[in-house]
Amino acid sequence: MGHSDRDPPFFFQKPSDAIVDTTIQTTVPYPPMTNDVHHEAELVVAIGKQGLGITQKDAMQHIYGYAIGADLTRRDLQSQAKKQGRPWAVAKGFDYSAPCGPIVPKDEIDLQNDAKISLSVNGEMKQNSTIDHMIWSIPEMISILSQYFRLKPGDLIFTGTPAGVGAINVGDEIKIECGDLPPCVFTVGDPEKE
Image (tube, rainbow, N blue to C red; front, side, top):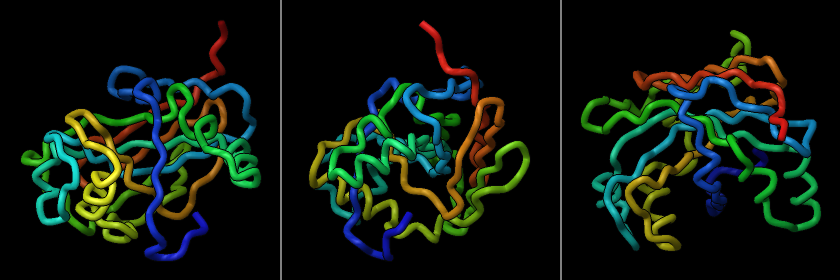
């Protein structure tokens, strides 16, 4: 996404109503106030133990489990915000902007470092990499985030995306997979009406 390896990490937040459990809701409405929504496949880390100032060595003890999800972005609004030096809240934190597959407890899955992460749109592969290509490791992300925020059970960390992000449109079916995790599958629906 235009950043070089090991630049200091940066974070943004999404409100809880951004989360979509794709095992229950399989259609995600196209958001208002945009004409350019992009997909970003991401490994999701679910926090299970509270912590502040967590060390990298202790970080894995704070994980409940893993899932796979999408960080949907109103790219046109994000580009405007970047140019004006403004926050990304309206570009990233909108309703239904974080579809997520089921969370699997970490003790029930062997998530290998070289697990493939991929996203397809209407059956066409758009993103394809392995999680060992993440710039920041999961323990590093947890440790760095916990310096700024007290992490609590139920917090979800979307970890970043491989190359190949792109636009999605109404009617598209999105399928995201990673290792042995259950896939995150959803269809982009019509915009919501009042």
